[in-house]
Length: 347
Image (cartoon, rainbow, N blue to C red):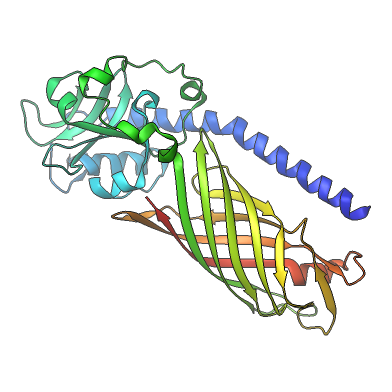
């Protein structure tokens, strides 16, 4: 009975956290987008300088790099190609101020980028043409309409776009060349696949604080992004050398941002588990099995993959052999695990 009450309490806290983050994410994203656009406007008139990143001279990616870093403290990749790999490509009719527009101006590679400011206009650093330097241009201009390729998000969308009420001029995109991003708005463009390799550890035993190796694990996830949130499923192969078992967590995950997600699910266990540091047999729970949270750093892109550092904290449920709840100390020693590793995302 006590265990059921604890589980209900955890679920209530979990749901309240989701609701609070969802409610505040929209306002935070709007504020950051506004700051980006306003700061970008201060660069208009700055000369074009290849490799430049400040108001004495800048190139197109340098402008975006500096605007994001100085206005909202967001560290972005420095080159156009890396920025394209970093951003989340979205349907053209969902673009909003603060998104990044990508162009193919040289050959078949993405070679130019600008900051979208609304009303089909964008701020960018042009290296040639009738006007050079940081300027305001329109996607309705024939040159930019011809070379426009895609739009990418570096910040969560706002509810205005989610509800489809954001005002834009894309009604003619399907026939004007602005629709060449094609399937970027399809179901599969919102699906992310990643694999992570972890070293598992904790910092205490039943009677002292000390670094303990808990083994290694491999984790795979598939997630679908929808608005601010993402939903996913995952499987992990985990060997816990302190428990003396091999575990297979099967999880459902909820991403609250690009960098943070929570997960939970049942756990299949192979082997006879013991309390770490004690000769006491315990019984792993199938369900409820595991609860956890995962944080990752910003992704560094290399061609078709992205690499990021990732830190997980998870708790797996264990009971006494007769099914009763373990004492708190034994429960934490057995179930609380930190996982540090590298995540590979397939772009």
